[in-house]
Amino acid sequence: MSSPSVSRKQIILEINGKVKIQCDLKRHLSPRTVGTIMRSLPLEGHAHFLGKSIVYFETAVDSGNERSTKEFKKGDIAFLSTAGSICFFIEDASSGKTMTPIGKMLGNMDPLKDVKSGDVFYFYEETA
Image (cartoon, rainbow, N blue to C red; front, top):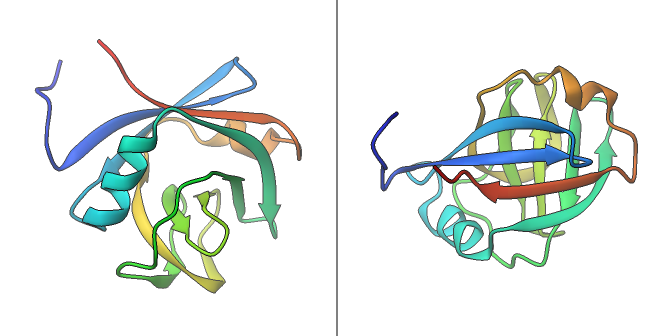
């Protein structure tokens, strides 16, 4: 068991109450945005797609752009401030929109490829 870290938080992305993917939010990537998301947990929303590379869900989190970029790798997690959305990259992608990088998926990401629009995402802090 790893010791708690101020700079990294273990988060679970649960899909339809069945599949769980372990995620790592990294405060050093975007301190203000990650802090805002952490204070807002747990979050829940319906799955949507941006092309074939990004699956996301909308939240009520309100945080501006921070250290934004358009280039992401498979497994990255980003925040799209214009829609308050948390985005999960299932393939390497160059997004048409600037997004704030917030973390990485650590577990098997394959279940994200089977997600259907409208599936329920539940994003919460892992507890011991």
